[in-house]
Length: 608
Picture 1 (tube, one colour):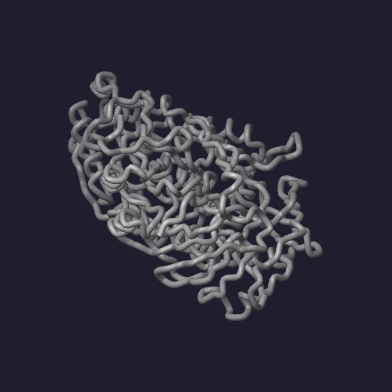
Picture 2: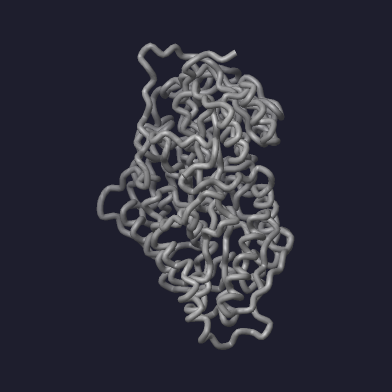
């Protein structure tokens, strides 16, 4: 059932979308966590979407924003995996829960051209892709003028890592990546580069610059020991340890390839010029506006559009007004505003994107009685109903698949996640919960306290619901509201809580998340849950290049985490896009901030 005025997505748009991004961990954990608190608070302001009908959204693994995410230091793996066959390009995010959206081919008589006009909520701080984590630059700004060694192919149902500047690659040993460049790649025809050939030396310079200590995107390449250019067209990347995510990191939107002459001219690229080898040429870059035109000498498929006109509009009301007046062709806003717009304009299409690694996180401190007992933690989960009416659409009905629950792992591939049925079976059985808790001994006289971070009304409402359910089941529970700064200190750093309800740490790497949150020695394993077998499996998946084998390990890890009954996300966050129906093939799949899908958008008519 859909809310009044809501346009159901066409079948070809009912798919899952995926995306991830990386940035480094601060040397000072407390400072980093306070930064995280501020970042998550930013994510939970009025840009937070309204409550959707869960059947109306598709899913991603990590939704980008204009703020930093944290890449925790990864313990050095000790287990060594063996490759029994030649490795292949690692596939990511094969769609399984819905029919893949077919690639739409433009009509043979398509007249290329037109400018796509859209807005972003926040602009970039400057124009140096290696000195910021801002998606306002890297995903939606001048970062689109740059290429990467690898990119994500979205044409076969989901993101798959393929060559961008390279023509081929081999993994000759588990720690040696050999890459051969294309023979037809040139810098854009702008001084001082003037269209010269992109060389292996250029790419090594750029990757080494990105990996500079203290640079915000350095952690993406923290597993690399050495970059070496051999001649003009070959690169060897040697790793410190096997890294199952290395291709994904090189395809990340933060791993843009820049030219040495341009960097050396001014010391950095903060004030430009922006000269890359990508599909778009930057013609204007200001705090509130970025304009890009097509690169006629691009080595790949030339975009169908003439250009992109990207405006910074912090207020979503302004963006919606821009859509209504057709100043904008595409906009992102809360569901309530999109619903209202689609009710008034039948020509507006929309899509909802659910993020399984963001939302309302709940964790239980396994070092405190009676939560140190696994049966008690299981009973607590059984006491909670994730589909409470005040957090869902008014017309939403019970959904046995519990689409709003996840374990919070930032996985690109939905095949690598436990089914929602497995997760849903752990909730909403108050009779069984009461039976278990009635025999519980050692409950403190003062009961338990749920600390909830003040990230928004949904968090407070969820925590209050949990208090009521636990008290009803026999455990006296009270609520303590804390500021986001206090939440960062007490919860993320010190683990001072019985149960917490808050926003998850924005860690974008699967391996980084597992080492930081679920490894026994993880810096943010504040639940205190320890399982040596989980530790072993975390290391094994970090070194496993074969996707099928890694998938098996990740599913086993998640099952063991679920059995621990101590940490999960109970309501995933959603983001909504709307666009006029003359915008064709708008498919906002942005894995790791890659907005290359814009090269395949075209306009079916010219709008004044």
